[in-house]
Length: 520
Image (cartoon, rainbow, N blue to C red; front, side):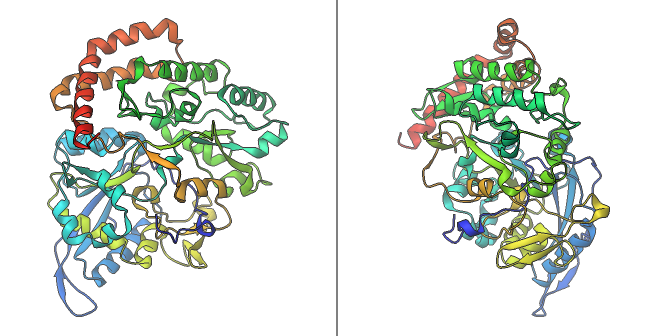
């Protein structure tokens, strides 16, 4: 990170949802110039305009059309030759809809990637990504200037770029969690230092809770600890540091690769989650909770513990009017242990292989970082209507009572933000979160598998089968809904029959070759 990102600036606007929850799948035209037409730049030159379609998870903001028109006017005035059209897909339909668009060759030019949900390598391995190396070389000067090389290199496969990372977060933040310190005080509780203490405190809070909505563990069910942030538990295991790569593979810093679901660490995670479930700390309907339901609970302020970071004072005050920014704290189990980056970047954007406009997609991403004005327009909307500036890097959102007391427009910094341009809500964001998320951690280390890309071509059928089988058989066990000892043997047998051993063997072979190429 740039040295200019200081503690004084490390106060972030409201935390951005990784998945960008939404409830409307309607596509938007939004003022894009869909026919190539010449535009005149400020210096009198004319250039052809190409409209690119950018597909993202979430819900279209109320004032989207007004803001996108201004974005396109600015793009035209700057002579970029690009107009933008964004297509919003509800987060819970994201994977299904995006996969359909990719498989049918639907016409679009840019889409969002969540590395902790479906890494860009997964799209690459199915032949869905365009090689944008040449476009970045020609038109990505600002991208290369404001995204550090070690992060940008994480978007390479065989030396070529297949994605553009969003440099918006310190990845070593994986492994911590948020806790409500005001609730600890109300219940005369100490901050937990291990998983058992956390469960005990949570039971007390649940018993004494006065609100109408119980402070359940708010999450959409999965079997991937990186996606769920159950990685908070891993710091308590003697075998840490290790990471779970690509959902199925345990990789430690010695280079050992194992089948994750066959490790003792997986069993310990599942046993912890079973305790949460049986003690009523997770929603009894946890297996069918949708992403927007989990996010709505966190946004309401009716929560005690959030695995990962999030929250802002505005949300907290909804049901807790006396709350302050210091009421949300960051907890690490065994804070003396190493801070590990499981991935070099968490989110990014890629160009689908069927796009006819890869250069223009890169031009747009580069233009965003060409000036603070460009960035502000895309991320925060119209100054004076959606936000006001607060000093050099601060901002205040202008909330509209007719829009659920939220600004009429807000971009997504998790989708395409950059720490060099981010503005900070100096009143409502959580200082401890911002320090963890947006300041460099000099003690952090990268997982040795952070930039490893698995190619399942040789085991494509088996890989597809184990993904499907794990969703059905492993998720209920990992979420604690099913008792481990009673259901695990049959679930593992199904995974083996689906081809787990063959996939793990292939992963081990490729990782060994990767290490050899790295000189390790």
